[in-house]
Length: 289
Image (cartoon, rainbow, N blue to C red; front, side, top):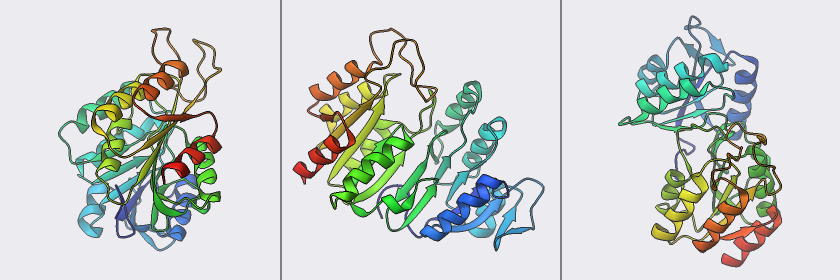
């Protein structure tokens, strides 16, 4: 297996009866995801497209041995859904939901301390091991199995870079969309460390954007700890200070960090090639491989 999930991972979908949840569950199953259960409070005992529905994640873990969850729930209930998955001790939970209040996410971050669960997201496209399984909304048709890991704050940018890689015949080991909110479960450093330990990953693409200091922290980690080659891309080079661009976390505060220039400079100091376009990224990866 590559990092996080594989074809055998037993998945429960939180919010499976909603329009988005039901649609993307079908897409995940068609791609190869081993969806064994769904959950919606009050609808336990029913089925959705042959998948049994339970009231809680804990029941899905007990009855179906679910190991991972992916959640499609309204923002007001997003944190509670994440906390439920953490309490049930699933290995991985992927929060697709956008717009979860940040004060709610502060509670989730506290609950993750010392827990057994890896949280991806929220406000993310999910995780895919190409040719094996996907948890989330990533378009499986642009991915191909291979040896390049990818971690990104942006879903759209992920697809663009992967398309550039795949059209060159360069496949991917795992792609992780970590999400673009200010408070998320798993950041760049966490994901890079997983790729560094993964024998199925020979090179890594890291796609960042303006706002926050996660990319600068990742650059420091790459320079100090990593041997696997990393190629970077930073979105938002022309964004004006103080204006949010896309994601809630993509805003430059004027603190001297968080700009595209500061992130690019930090990565280049760490020996990372930073492309100006997705095609530049694919070219740099091709050179490493």
